[in-house]
Length: 419
Image 1 (cartoon, helix red, strand yellow):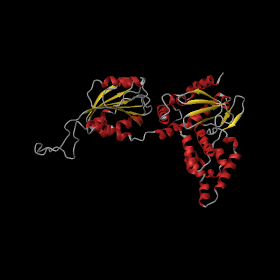
Image 2 (spheres, rainbow, N blue to C red):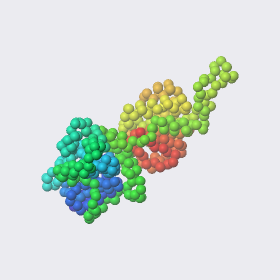
Image 3 (cartoon, helix red, strand yellow):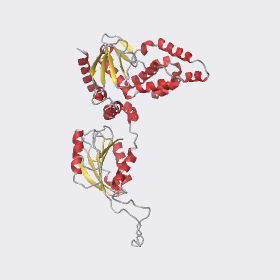
Image 4 (cartoon, helix red, strand yellow):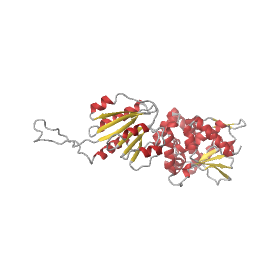
């Protein structure tokens, strides 16, 4: 069996084991390299290099190594390693060693075995603390540290040497002695530096289909779209913190509503209508309250916490507009007409749904109403294709607040915010 067929079998095995890694892997450019000193590695241009040693491993070890390399890209380790190297004048191979330990801890990678039964020890925090004794004082807290924090604490002694004016060569000698002593751990998963020998492209990758511009942005979108597939929820939370949008979605939600109502009404003022002399002292009040349409996804994949979070936002806008509200899963439940705080409190209590996710059921009902703007709150795991949803969305300003997947909708009147 050639390497391409072997890799295709691996893709199927990864899809069955953990789809998150599969959907990232199929977008990367995969290159086979005729070299003997490494197993696999990645670079800053989101290319994955596999060697002869990799294809000599057993299938479980191959899958673990692929997960390992993908997490390097997800955590942006190639760029972070280069930044740390320039910032702290730190040996790149030592930083890569720490990055490997962080990734291996996340995926529980301890031993790598080849098809002949020979095993290789994967770097972990236990080995790190044997190599760098000054890390022992941090105990279990080291597992919670980022790459930058560990490097800073590791080289704290070196900063003191710099401050006392001692020669930089002493630090370099110390680093080289560490590399010589623990060479067996440093040979795995290093950054490619020398000219590569004979190469075979196993997979071109969809990241490079149009052009090589904005590859990092494309990769980030792929991670966000497929993060919900990651079974390890602790790891998923950590990645989500790295990739979450910088926009405050609650503030944008209110801004979106107010900006689409501003042309039709004057907001209420601090004074009320005088009940005794309404004609002489009329005060100010809204001339007209326009409608907005909101559809909240109540399928089984949306948690009670998320539903509560969505519904709480209705209190912020009910003062200025009327809300036509639908709950929907495979069917649409409603409409509920909300005009006051009391309406929001009473009518939203009974949650209907908890089935599948068919946004078509809600879009069908949306055609029956007159409103100024549309808001959809969902995890966007609907059964329909994104192209179908894009074509059937009404020609109104639309805001989609998504919990998990980011749909591929490119209409100019549709804004998508990931919560």
